[in-house]
Length: 192
Image 1 (cartoon, one colour):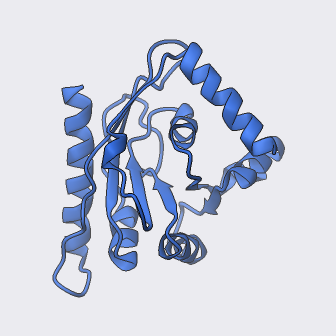
Image 2 (spheres, rainbow, N blue to C red):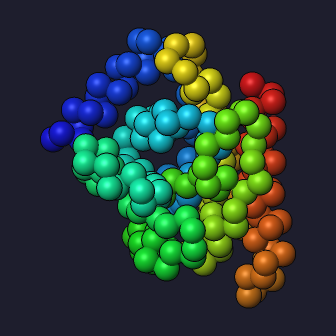
C-alpha cells in the first residue's frame, strides 16, 4: 500500500513538474525476464524507471543505502535489493538470477555509480554477465534530463539486445556485450 502511494506521488511529480516523456515502450519483451540497463546521472533515475512501468522493477542498489532508516525502508518495499560494490557480491548475483529466471524485470546501472558530468562512464561487466547466465535480453534505457529539480525528463527504451557468445561466457564476450548495450544507450541519448 505504501509502495503504491509513493509510486503514485512520484508519477504525479514526474508528469506535472518534470513533464516526462517516455518513448519505446513497444520495445519491452511481453513475457519472460529481462534486464533493464540504464545510464545513471541522478538520484531520480531509479524513480523514473520504476514509475514508467506497471510491472515491478527489481533494482540492485548499493548496500550503503539500506542502512539509512527511511531510505532503506522505501528501497525494500519497492523491490530493491542490496549489492556490495567493493567486491563481487554473490548474494546479489543469486538474487538477480533468481528474479530473472522467475520472469521478472531487473534494473541495473552498469556504470555502478552516478556520472557527475552526464557523460557515460565505463560499464562494469555485471549486467552482461547476468544476461548471459540467465539467458535473458538486455533492454537499453536512456535517461535524459533527470538531473535537477525542474526541466523535462525523457526516457527512451531501446530494442532488446540478445547477448552474444560462443557457449561458455568469456570476459571478451562480457566486454563486447557491455559495450554493445552502452553504445545503444549513447546513441539514443545523442539522437533524442
